[in-house]
Image (cartoon, rainbow, N blue to C red; front, side, top):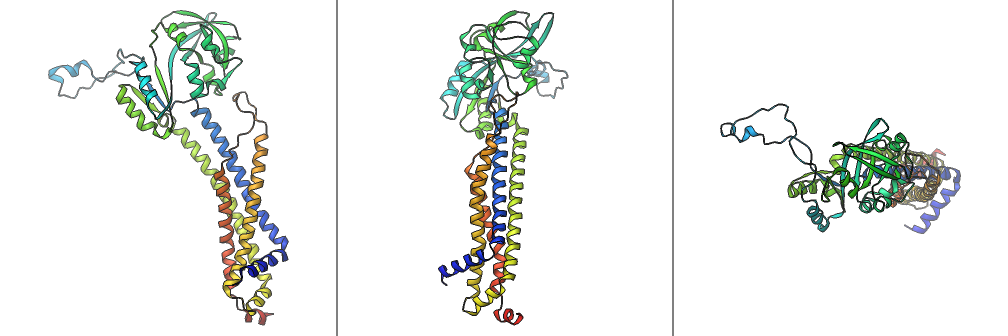
Amino acid sequence: MNIRLISRIAVALLFARWKQTLVAAIGVTFSITMFIALLSFMSGLNNLLDGLMLNRTAHIRIFNEIKPNLHQPVHLLGEFKKRYNFIRSVKAGSSRQAIYNSGAITQVLNRDSRVRGVAPKITAPVFFNDGAIDITGVIYGIDVTAESNLFHFSEYVVSCNPLDLKNIPNSIILGEGLAAKLMAGIGDVVLVTTVTQEQFSLKVVGFFRSGVQELDKVQSFASIGTAQKILGKPVDYITDIQVKLNNMDLAPAMAKEYAQLFQADAEDIQAANAQFETGSFVRTLISYLVGITLLIVAGFGIYNILNMMIYEKMDSIAILKATGFSGRDVNLIFMTIALSIGLFGGLMGLLFGFLFSLVIDQIPFITVALPTVTTYPVDYNPVFYFIGFSFSTVTTCLAGWAPARKASGMDPVIIIRGK
């Protein structure tokens, strides 16, 4: 078996019917191009949607949930201790929202090698006074630096420097929807009333745009010190500790560990956003299925073209076998043809897929809801290119296997007699 001679024969057969060869190669190229472009765009879109939710969500949230006391007085009485006591309409007890020993807990978390960062937070329900009308809202007391480093807070703040919240006393950043309700601009002073009827004046230094209008109509942000002052609480008052991990997959196990260690409630990101992860998985699965379908359709096109080539090249096959070429040699010739189409079409598909992705990446995508997004999102993941090229090669080999096997089994005598 002369590999060089077989290669030259395969090339001659390819260029003898170059139009059919070109159609087959274009089919593979188009399939790989759309496979790369579709997966890159869908993956970029998934990353964008994940970012909107996950970038602003702690991997583990440590807090004290307001709930009824499990140990009711009736359970402490000797005569009822060993009985089943059914109590209806149990109200929440005097449990506090503040986390006990928040400073010590923060130090322990910062020393944990699994933790990337910690951001304390205070949730303060208030009323924004607009003349005679009270608008319900929430002020989140945050550490601006930690919030920006861990949860991209600065990317959603418009019309100001986020550090103004830390540097300017008694300042507030309003959600854009809430600012529109209050008709408040930069430098204006808004009046808030706490649930204990205390009133405070806060200076507006900026606006926050999360992309979710219903949230922006309610939420606002202040420094931790300002939030503590509004609530009349001491400097160690913290209602939430947000934890960002180096590996998000560890969140469920670590949440249970922290809940037991700190004697507080701990919620992991998987439990809080299970439905969101399901939606992202389904979108990715659909993208892969559509892309693979395109490749399979291209494979059938190559199969049909090679089948027709065999019928048209029966004379050549008869001559090859009559001059001493074995069935294995003929098989190898047609497999070389199929593999050449797959490799050429695959490489061109990768190139055009990348160029098409670049075009998509430059298309303007401007929306008020997403201030950080200016063009359509695209993910240039090398895995997509590896999968596309591998699948194109495998598909074309499988498509060429049956026609090549058929050609190798032909009897030259029968072919010549038929002619």
